[in-house]
Image 1: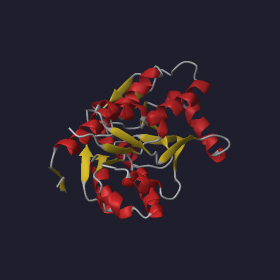
Image 2 (image 1 turned 120 degrees about the horizontal axis):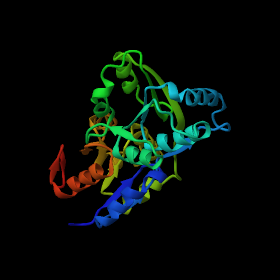
Image 3 (image 1 turned 180 degrees about the vertical axis):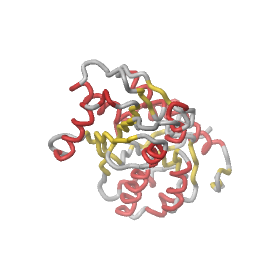
Image 4 (image 1 turned 90 degrees about the vertical axis):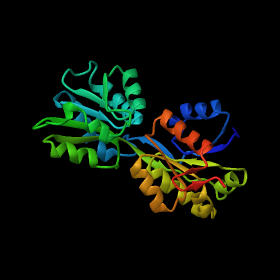
Length: 267
């Protein structure tokens, strides 16, 4: 099988496993992080710190705590460790995705997770999250993002709070960055969030490469991002089951081994 070049756009700290897996396939990773993860601190979000502290101090009164990402675990647990030398007994702890669950385990938190689709819909299918009358739920995440999880939990009777502990910042690069990547060969684009799609297309607009980028097969995790990629004009969209390593690599192999997939033809 011919080696290919794969654009990896995840934040730098989340790239390692994916890069190693691409190398093991005999392919080449083109690393261009389109987002940076910034913990909220006194210097960049002073107005948010009081609410973060209040929610952390109230941790023992929540029945369920849900981590959205590995970043939410690492940064959230830094806050918990400041005020809770011992983990509170009450909350049940949940993860969206295997990587998130694994990170929780590294912090000594027993993670409950949904099925292999590893998304919020899978988590919402858990029996213990069906009848929530009067129960308190804390969702640990970054600023912004979807409100679907909160909305469904509220519909089931829960009182839901966010603990937003980081923000995502779009990155930009010198003019011509994507031009050089395309000229040197770029066979697949991988993106794992709507913010990443937008940041990549913003860079492409600066470089004048928007149409070339939209013609390259793109791998996205899940139907929601498939629809978003189509709205932005991508022509050849491959859908990974989720954003986990195994699912993304399976999608890479799908691009490499099939001549036709969701409208993409290798001819």
